Structure formats: structure tokens, C-alpha cells
Length: 87
Image (cartoon, rainbow, N blue to C red; front, top):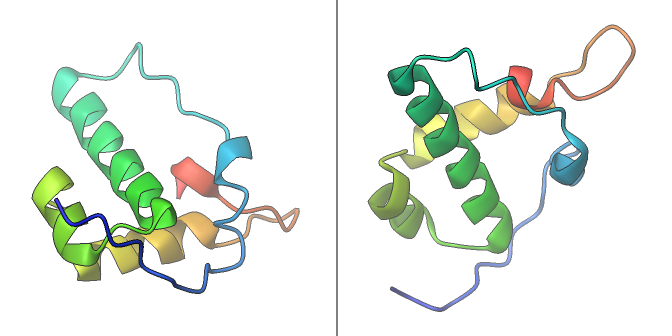
């Protein structure tokens, strides 16, 4: 694995990922839970500075899908807070 950390601008709302409310995974089917965990891992790897190719290799999530997830998760709710994992 490439140990180069990518320097990138972080979209507003993504910097508070540690404070996002976690969905309840206990009631999820294994497929849905695994899909959620894969997306969550991809977002965290992006914030850690991994390259898009490393993220795809680790999670199967493409650059385009990752950008879609970032945009959805950083959309705002009625109160102005990031939707987070519920996006």
C-alpha cells in the first residue's frame, strides 16, 4: 500500500465526521450493514488522506461514488446540520 498521504481540501461538514450520529446497525441485514460499513470506511480513509485508488482497492468504492457520498453526507438538514451517515 502506498504510504503517501494526499493533501486535499475537506468539504464543509465532513470535518465533523467524528460527531455524526451512527445509524442503528443491530436491526440491519448483513448486506445492508456491510454496505454501510464499507461506505463509512471509504469516508474515513478519504479523511486519512488515502488515494482514490487505495480507497477503491480497500472498499470497492470508486472516486465518483465517494464524491457522491461526500455530497450526500454533507448536505444540510432543516436545522443546518450535516446529514452525516443518514445522507
